[in-house]
Amino acid sequence: MSNGSPTGRRPIGVRIAGTGSALPQRRLTNADLEKMMETSDEWIVQRTGIRERRIIDRSKGESTSQLAAEALQGALADARLNATDLDLIIIATMTAEMSCPASASLVANMVGAGTCGAFDLTAACSGFVYGLNVAHDLIKGGAYRTIGLVGADALSTLMDYSNNGRSTSIIFGDAAGAAIIKATDDTSKGLLAQAMHSDGRGWKEIYVPRCAEDFPPGIAADDAKYNHVQMNGASVFKFAVGTFPELIQQTLDSAKVAASEVDMYVCHQSNQRILTAARERFGLAEDKLYVNIDRFGNTVGASVPLCLDELRKSGRIRDGHKVMFVAFGGGLTWGSSLWQL
Ligand code: UT7
Image 1 (cartoon, helix red, strand yellow):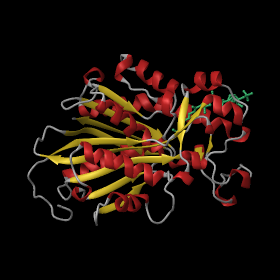
Image 2: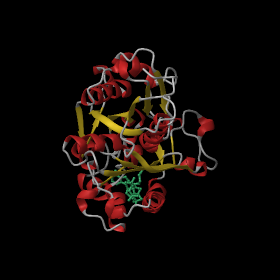
Image 3: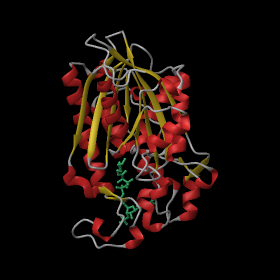
Image 4: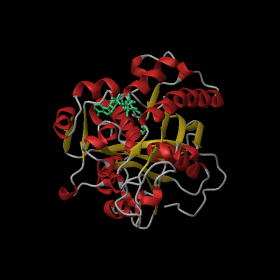
């Protein structure tokens, strides 16, 4: 374990050594939602591309931390490492069970990671991409060699599955995805460019009120909305369609890489129409921008690592590839991470 003992100034590379993911058992299909609120499979598929999502059942032991621990264990096994090899655990989540302890502390205990560092990172849907940049640079700085990074969320715990919540509850699903970020002697591997942005003026586009004082000016406080995601869908949609291509272009420019040189774009699964707009803007072939939103919905912090795990396991992302990770979400936040694997 190298935590707290810098490896000196010898240049090091950073690689993604393993990935894993976890899903709740219960499937919530569009047909199920039709029975809970006034909506239709046709409306949901047309507006979002989503056909089903998974949601947790806490009475069966499922939770954000449980999913995160399962995903991390999968990633450790994939990297052929033990939990005690980890120097640090970072969990990107907005749905930790408690505000204290951090989900990362619970996960460290569940996987048996001993006394390694553990903290949560909150940047909504951008959390995992922010985490990739943070973990990379902590390793590059020399003080850490092996970091378990997880994106895990259970937005079902913040949904109103009635007519009042139909514009948000149809979108979100629960999941976790994990990656082991590790030092390597191969200095060609690691980040080619990164970006992390936020515009707090847009906080009221997606928020979760807990009390009357949390509502934005001009919006009447309503206790029926407490602990339920409030989202201005049309406004977030517009923000995303503009931001995604701009962010991708800026990241390509700063790495001096052409769009066509990137082997795979792993983008936050927010809405099929937003993904299609970004792909068309760069004239990318359909198989270069991965989509799994039809099966899992928008899983917030888990969305990007869930795609990453599927792509690695199917061999569509491998050593030597250039991969662009992009996400945007509540905050508002947005970020990118362009890797040479
Ligand atoms: O990752 C976090 C970031 N979040 C996002 O990326 C979300 C981005 N936004 C979106 O994906 C879309 O805005 C939504 C899918 C949320 C909504 O689609 P939209 O095309 O923007 O619909 P809308 O909210 O403008 O609503 C259009 C109509 C309304 O009816 P009226 O007022 O035109 O009569 C809604 O009441 O659709 C109605 N509607 C629904 N109808 C059937 C809203 N939700 C539903 C529903 N089923 N579930």
